[in-house]
Amino acid sequence: MTILTKSVAASALLLPAAAMAQTAPGDPELVVTGTRAPDPVPADQLGASLTVIDDEALTQRQAREIADILRDVPGLAVSGVAGQTQVRIRGTEANHTLVLIDGIEVSDPFFGEFDFGSLAIDSAARIEVLRGQQSALYGSDAIGGVIHYITLTGREAPGPQLRAEGGSFGTFNAAARYAGVAGDVDYAISATHLGTDGTVGTRGGMRDLDKRTNSVSVNALWTPASNTRLRFVGRWSNTESEFNNQDFTPGSPTFGFAVDSPGTYVENRGLYALVGGEVDLLDGRWTHALTGQIADIDRDGFSNDVPDSGNEGQRLKASYVSSLRLGTEALRHTITFAGDWERERFRNTTPGGFAFTGRRQIRNLGLVAEYGLVAGDRLAFDAALRFDDNSRFDDTLTYRVQGSYRFDFGLRARAAAGSGIKNPGFFELFGFVDGRFIGNAALKPERSEGWEIGLEQELADGAVTIGATYFDSTLEDEIFTDFPPPDFLATPVNRTTESRQHGVETFLRARLGPQWRIDASYTRLTARENGTREIRRPRDTANVAIAWTAPEERGGLTLVIRHSGSQTDNAFLDPSFVPTTVTLDSFTLVSLAGSLRLIEGVELTARVENLFDEEYEQIFSFTNPGIGAFAGVRARF
Image (cartoon, rainbow, N blue to C red; front, side, top):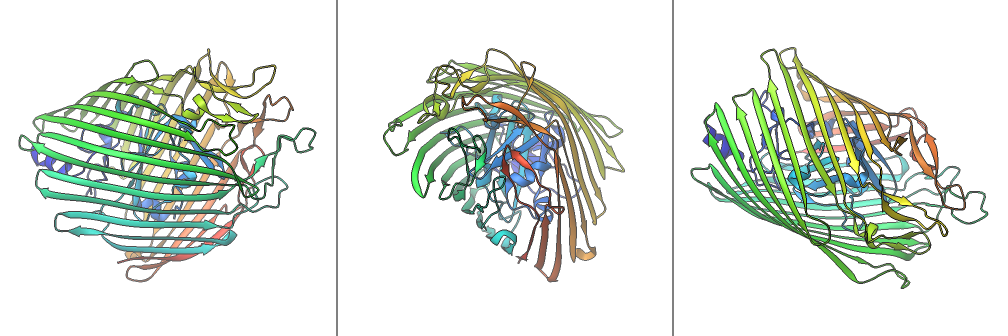
């Protein structure tokens, strides 16, 4: 196949709303997150660390919420309570991760991060996790990396799909999808519902925490001509989740601990959309793409069933990408220029009159230049430079370089280095919680620089791959919450010292015939700020997923083991509200999922989570569910 044919075929996907191109068995896996060029790139040509959780893995492990499955990615730590689930990549902060859904940036402009507890997994999807500083491609937020959730196209997963299940804790989950190709139009429509009456969320508590998540998404691609593509992506989501507060009543015996809080819940509503067009010129070698997107997020908090907090955030973003492909099969060059214009708005809707209720906004213009080189199937190199002109903060320049080389005996050596930036969020700049938190409009952006080097070795004719990566990053101007005297009111400030994260990620991937699939990883992390261990970052995380498929795909079993080592957290046990450091014990979660085919296209499913009823805390004094069993049906036509 010529480079021209490959380019035209790859460009059938529209960046940044691109979905995965279908790859035949044995072909390299194509990913869209590692470059700003319109063409997907083979994962084995990236110098940076990237993990793909494909649709097969999501189905076998019966994943229902993205937060659960992200525990299986090297370098990721998941923690959270009802109403806010966080993911930290390589020891960075939770708001240092850029989150995309079908190419749409979905973080809350008010809080500056995404609540992973609000994303239910569709019937057909995949996840790409790109680790390391990626601000040269994506701008602010991408210090730790990028998590890209992608729904499959109608061509990749055609036909109707349905699933429904119920089980422990008053749980009922359901999903429906209809997708296909009609002439020049590729379409996919899906809906999900997750509902549970919940479990007790505090030590010694009695209140079960209810949660309901609903979402609807549409993804359509129209190809009116062989060199022209138009795409629309739309998503609506609504999550209502009960949660418990901490007791900060002076003199209370439970001061600083989480306690039952009847009538306390949060409602999070998100509306996201993207429209775009792409055209190929010069016989497919020169591609132009123009997209516009919006993220509109409302969040309301209730106490004793009465509204007591609220905010609105909106992000408008327009992007233009021009990418020129030159060379031959033996030596290929890609030159890409991109421009991103973005405006974020915020409004505090907290009732009571003590919070600022006017609108504020920040605008940003980012310009990207990227060069990619591929020599045969051995050498790949990529470099990117980005300039950002921000209406509030100083102009910034970020970079990324990466390279990969494959040897004859199946060894691939790779390396990457880059810089990252994270602008303060509106809540950090202007937020106000009566008597507890005061924003700081003088905050500076956080800055990070880091590098990594890795080796991957294929064994057994490519059926088994093992790999290891060492990474090292330094963060400056880190934003943290201080409690200055004499009032000890919480306020965010920039640190004057450095925060450093370094460690080792290892993985094993095995495909042993059509029956067995094994995915495993282990991460050793050291994350310290001025010599002090940072909170909610386990030193050791490990996981293994072993999936067996019965002959003729009559069913299967999947065992998943996820271990999180001990970690520290802040506890506010002193009436001065100055935090003390506590240690949370390590824990290991085991789940077992199975399926049995009844007739062609219809399966019974069953799953046991937390098989050994482990008691654990991800955040001090907030407890998590025990053993749970679920059963249902899944149909594909």
